[in-house]
Length: 114
Length: 115
Image (tube, rainbow over all chains, first blue to last red; front, side, top):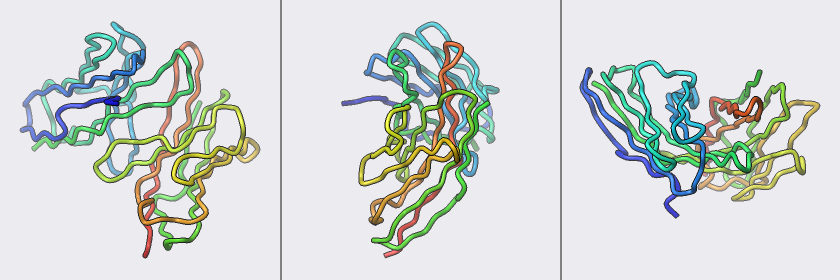
């Protein structure tokens, strides 16, 4: 019953450093998403992938890149981290073949950029 | 266009009293509506969902919500609050159109339970 697994759970970076957040789901879902959660702003979509090999920008894509490696995995990369990217990042997936819009979330990755 | 508004950023109730968390939405398409719960330092867990079936939806942990199209509301209720209900609650509207889904999150309501 793994569901959606994110790594790492915690990370501290210095400004300008790069890192990749990893996400994997074992539910055979087509769609995967990366969100960031900031106080008072709810969840905002960074990027999403409707299927393997496709990615699209969400509401706040600047400063991020993504890669849909295969159907299971969807990674988020920060090429040059900035303090404004301090946030909690959530990966999610959904089964659009039986569309209801229900999202399945990982437990989050807490990133601090100094 | 879609939007969702959670009318209270923070709600505090006493243990054993009713809970009401308010959510209003707008959608140009037939929406699905969801409530998620987020406990501290945890991911989001689905509480309940409305997907054009019964308008009164029952979820986990004794929560329920009623879809009222005329009022464009989807308020979350529970008859009797428990200490373990203290968490962040997120209302979400979703619609499927043009071969893609559009999912909008509310800004959240933090529920506190007083002993």
